Image (cartoon, rainbow, N blue to C red; front, side, top):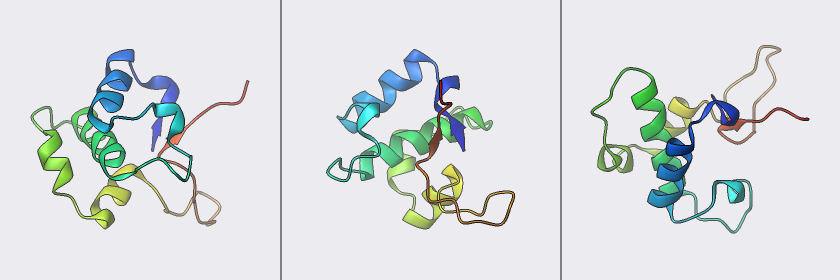
Length: 92
């Protein structure tokens, strides 16, 4: 899972440009998720050592592949299901 606070402004801008939505709307039900998840998957793949991974490559991922890559719906350390968004935020 990517810590949203560790994203560069460039990465946030890329996610917003590619998805057509503000990153702050990620958790809202009415926000389209396909392009947002693909943009986030692209950033995650690039951060994990694949700098040539493109948005088109991310659009070709299955939902299972994207959620695994982003750590969505995986079990946390206590064995509880993690239903959170793909980005972790720290409370102030």
